[in-house]
Length: 97
Length: 329
Image 1 (cartoon, each protein chain N blue to C red):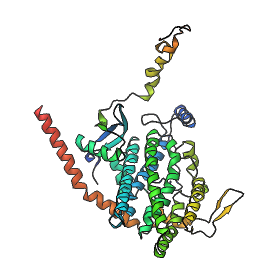
Image 2 (cartoon, helix red, strand yellow):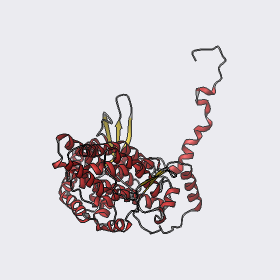
Image 3 (tube, chains in turn yellow, brown):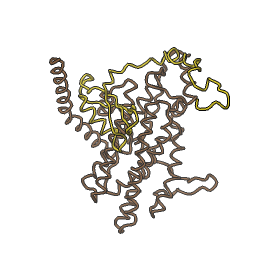
Image 4 (cartoon, helix red, strand yellow):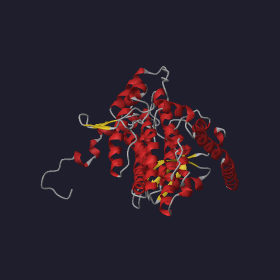
């Protein structure tokens, strides 16, 4: 049994479903290097024509926001309804706006 | 392919945790919110999930063995291509689940080690042998059918990565069941010998399939907590009943007989009454006394050991190339 340090690194996999869509996270794979990560991602996540393009990146390279900071980060947007077009009342009869 | 909780009667020991955090967590889960990897969660929730998800992943991987046994002997090129695709799917399902379980902080190697050392369990169903080609039909129809019954509700399980893996798995599982039923259908409409083979496979796989839903509810101590945490969404007995009700007419439709003399439609309940499962056999197989339990583990250990040089070579090669690239910069 190998020790933990011998484990191939973990890669996050992003898949473009079809042309025109952005890449979306679908899961992760272990691989020795980036090329192998693409091959493993292809075998694991695209057996049924699920996509047309893959991105892989080392999981360790991701910096994520802390769930504990979610309120501080995202709630300030709640009281800024004037950022949405529906905030503004336009009289009937005015068109193309 | 399957998720029986085989942890027995061990209750998780209590760990001192912030009651406010626990209460907030319980509220979120009760509201059907999803819990994501970096969210706070009780230790027992994390442990239960790691156990359930890794058992599930191990079952997918070990589940490749009984079917792999027939790839080289499939009766036609069509059947061979289908079986290859199915076994490859099982590998994929194992990988989705391992990577989802890794988000809880348990490494892939730790999980592999737990399986190979016999510490981790996998579904008892894979410790039965595949003696004839009809067994491949019975496995797809019954074993994957039971797995679907178990897995569909888990698409709404509370742990986000697990739920997302289950959505993907369920999409792929339906082909597994249909190809199995198709094999049984053809055999059941074939020569007398083929009909006997189909019936014999049903006779041998029926009861082990009912065992896949796990012990009866009154002997399943973790069910209540797991249902509260939305790790499990239906009880073992509810799912077992549902499986019987759906499967019996499928057997009748192709002229096969479910091997249970006590099986009888109960008009009042709107469901089938059925005989008692031999739980002695179930617990014996859980303990590793299944007919081919030793062979299954030997095959996994051999695959892991034989692959060691490949894993090492790929890792060393990648390190060397990374070092060379760094030196060139």
